[in-house]
Amino acid sequence: MPEPARLTGEALREYCLAKPGAWPDEPWDGDTVAKVGEKIFAFLGAGSVGLKCGANRDEADELVASYPDDVSKMAYIGRAGWNTVQLAGDVPDDEILELVDASYATVVSKLPRRSRPE
Image 1 (tube, rainbow, N blue to C red):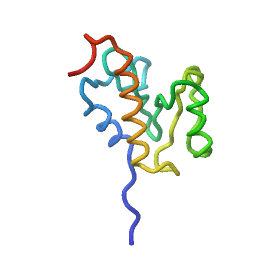
Image 2: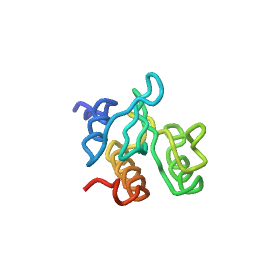
Image 3: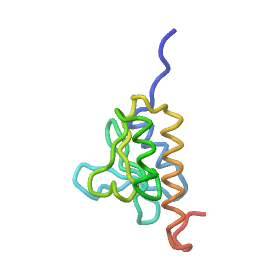
Image 4: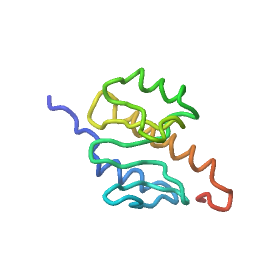
């Protein structure tokens, strides 16, 4: 029986941008992010995604401890609970999508009410 298809960078991008109010941006040359309002909720790489994975580093480290080969603290903003999650590794695709949902919800909750999507 063949392995089921794994989540690709393009499929993840489409998933992120299908969220209410989401839009793509390229704040740094060659780096695409998904934003809601003016805030990033996903850093979209070819084989990885950067997501808000906890309110603080301790919460985000729980995911790193569960998947040490495929989840790591993001450079610069990792102390605020951001992790890089590798696609097609040990983290199940459905869990990656749940992490996207949680990152999006966290960012939306911090937007001013007038900037939140309907």
